[in-house]
Length: 462
Ligand SMILES: *Cc1c(COP(=O)(O)O)cnc(C)c1O
Image (cartoon, rainbow, N blue to C red; front, side):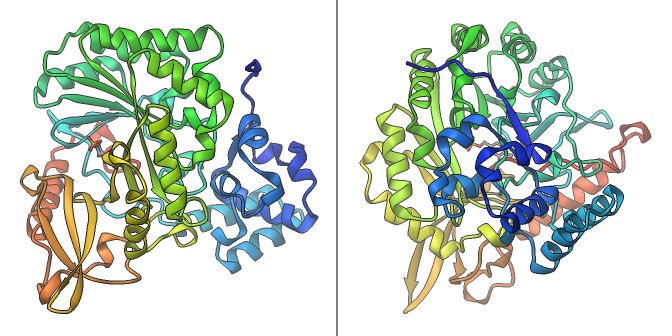
């Protein structure tokens, strides 16, 4: 029997009311409060009671995934924050310290500012990002939060209210008009935050106009979500869940593929009774669940975990899709896994699963020029190199191109890699510079009322 349960979020303010937290030693509680004041924090009853194994805290992977950790701040910042909280400093003083620390945490990962928001007729098409020809991302204004927050979230800045970063979406009408002007687009991906924090009636206001427009070029609608992990009740309980499943069917009745792009970090998330029920219900509508997640130290940096994760996905009829490299924002140092190790973990897991699990691709970096997979380590003339390949690219000509970088055991992102054989830059670098320059010129045409010079966009999805 599945228990009816209503959603309840716990944020910084509610920390003391979580019994498992109240039972922690006072100094650990103070540290937790200190870090949660700086980084986004939000969990819910289901995550606390059914996903975290409290007998293994703090090492427990789901605890690491959802509760901010002392090691995520540098020692000085942590001491500052615990000091302020310990002496019950004024909220103004605490707030000022928090903002200063947040701004040092690279809220805008490299290249993310405004390369992807389309500019047409002298203004930005708000709520839309269009980086790869076939796929448009849409950020519904009212889907910009999640059922719980991941501590490594690359969109963390939008959750802690740093100025100018909250991504305002816009009306579905504008999205439809944009799609009508762009017949090259075959896929719309709703993202956020988590679009499934919206009630179905609200989600319908975004999706129904797309269906009504009967765009012949549109082949799929996707929703990026972590709800299967953090709040599977979204699919199993009450009339709103039933209506969501009906909406998924309606998309398919209009001749389109419906996909859930499920953020799936750890096998435990898929193994509760309610999660299994949720997957079955979603699948019963014909919706395909494709699973993706970043590789995160202390959460899932182990080939055995990924092999089990992919096997569990296949067992429940979901499709392993991407393994991502964690991007360079927020408490990156705490979570980062170097590319060499990421590839070793990927390969270690990949060889343990059947071909049904090998639909996965990775480890993949969503970098400024495109999605780049570390495809292997290659020896040429007795020296190791990384073989890299574009899975997606800003210029479609780059897709599928394989190229080499000097091997490094420590590099964790594209900008830490050097081209092989002493080349001064990667083959795409000059054109990438040209794309940036063109963008700067284009932005100069923006009308004064767009506010565009102030606005920063959130990082793109992985
Ligand atoms: C990953 C990503 C997509 C979707 O790519 P697929 O390979 O089609 O899943 C679309 N836009 C951006 C900006 C992305 O990073």
